[in-house]
Image (cartoon, rainbow, N blue to C red; front, side, top):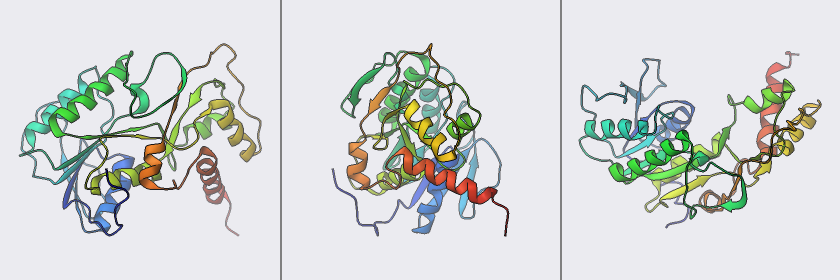
Length: 283
């Protein structure tokens, strides 16, 4: 496994972004800025950023026309319905491509780990034993992506950042939360940096857990947010027991170096400050 490549390493010549949500929209400019081509495969006909070509398709069914050859692919599909939803979508994708790209990155989730809570830090060496349908579907999607495309698997924890303010809204609304639930997260900017890197690395690791350096009980996180906002912390759900996992993000940090948002404190502070600037009336 190689360390962080020279920043002048070019991106793949042509990258297919399968799903074009917030991650794809943030990743595309990085690839374009360094001379790469970007194609977005999505179900809608919404306008695309300048420089991004679009193909409309729904991978729930076989594609009516073949896809162009691409050098790399990033799959960021929302979880399809059913345990085999990902496998079906990826099989349709493989059938439509003239050949498998040289590099595929499949964005899964730390949600492949479910079941009983554990304080044991989970690393890339730990094998998931999914219980629920969503977790089993994610794990089957990972396996299908490896079988069909030799994919690098990325498992983000809870993604947050601009436009992803669910927890901020909960705190402002004083919603009841389980203070003892172990939580992990990754700022969108750091996740996009990781995806960009994994496309360019000559020898990427086969699996990366995209989590920051501060797994923490939810009560600690909402308490910090509330103090920063200057409001009372949301109440605890006393009926809920401890749940969740601790995920170790050491591998991600060894690849990226220091994260832009190493803990929830830096990330949520930046979001709150940006919101305050936006809401402040002009002088």
